[in-house]
Every structure is written in C-alpha cells, then in structure tokens.
Image (cartoon, rainbow, N blue to C red; front, side, top):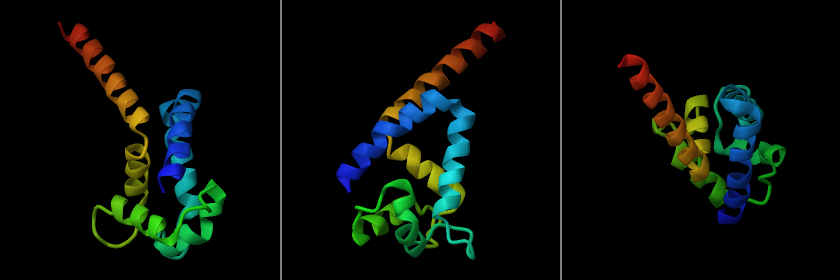
Length: 116
C-alpha cells in the first residue's frame, strides 16, 4: 500500500492548492460518492474493491483495501461514512495536514490581531 499512498500524497496537496479548501472538500465528496455502496450509502470493503479503479487504486491488494477501511472506521461499523472518508484522506497526506496547521495558525493570528 505504501507505493500507492505516496502517489496519493503527491496529488492531494496539489489539488488543495489548485481547488482551494471548498473545492477540495467537493472533490473528496465526489470521491466518496464514486466509492460508496449505493444501497448502503457508505464505503464498504466490497464497494471500495469494486470501484477502486475509478481513483487509480486498482493495484491495491484486498489486505490493503481492508486496512484502509479499518484505519478510517472510527465508529466501528466496518464501513466509512463521508466524514470518516474525508478524515482518512487528510490523514494519508502528511503534507496536506501540515498545510492545514499553517492555515489554522494564520487564521488564529489574524483573529488575535482583530481582537486586540
């Protein structure tokens, strides 16, 4: 899975810079919609496996796909809802997480300036 993660990590920050925050969230939501089980409304291992080629993830093994679902499954239901999917995508991109910290610091600094 590491090789695929590196490819993903290279593109998510580029998408964020190109699309901006709202655009990135929209694209993540579109990705969720592509991967989810249309009957259940969540991403299951089966739906991820069936639709992974849509996001260029067809090279991942079943074990990698299961690990991906388990890593993002915070409520323990064995599937990813939209929020869990988005959080997982951010967690898989350390560069994007670092950028998020920088943006947060800038906003907080501006808020403090405006307050004082």
